[in-house]
Image (cartoon, rainbow, N blue to C red):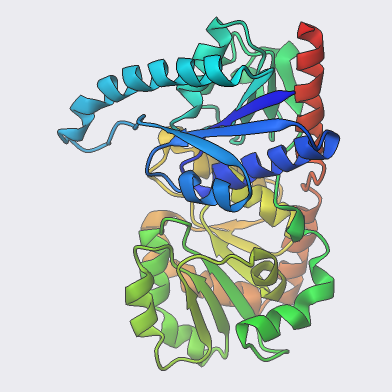
Length: 364
């Protein structure tokens, strides 16, 4: 059996995609899996590191600001559609899976017109235009939120949750090991700051401007900045042993285990991971995503008293104070932790893998 998994762009798309691939491999170790991503995006590095082959498309998205780069988008899309068709013809997949991101659209669109079974993995609580259009001919749509029949045909929807990395289970047993890994003292409160794999400017600048407040509160920081802010953050933290700065954290199981409170954007993949690890979180939804996905994702938790949110525009004044207040309020922390844990769906990758096998059998 052969499967193409298409999409990427951010860790929120890539790591769930890899989890799906790993779940498929569990069902058949001889299965051939090919990833298709966007050239120059982070999937071109992360997917091979996970042991899978990947091919890149020249596809790109429209910039929100007025720029000459937007004139090239239609030409890149046409070239990507042609290359996607060639990849499908050469690889001959039994199914094609789209996980979101620039490369997902061209590959699924071509596969559907070539009569190949397709599955969409919609991570967000508010579906984007591309997935809504592709769902009309898709065989299955796996979702992580209730009420998605607003966007997709009811009969195609499967409520599976979002896949997460398998090393995020059972974190309680490795807390001491995790603290030692980061060089942190046991018994001192720890905040994990996730500035995003590419870097969330607002979060990073808010943390940078509040280091004295964390230091005064005797709070330790594990700060993932993303590659763009790493140099600045490293200089700020040079003489602050309580602040550990990383451009990208590879041992996320240690980071989540060490943390007492987590500050993060509200990407769908990250939220699914937060539900698994069950830690109290302060979410700062990015205003720079299509259809304001992240605010809707965050509110799905806030409405269940499972997280706190701070608006991006308010982060400079409120983010540090909100996180510090939360880490010092054990009853609120425990309540948020308990409620977010109830939303976890740990078997998502396996369910999606089984759904892929099912749609392939329907075509045989």
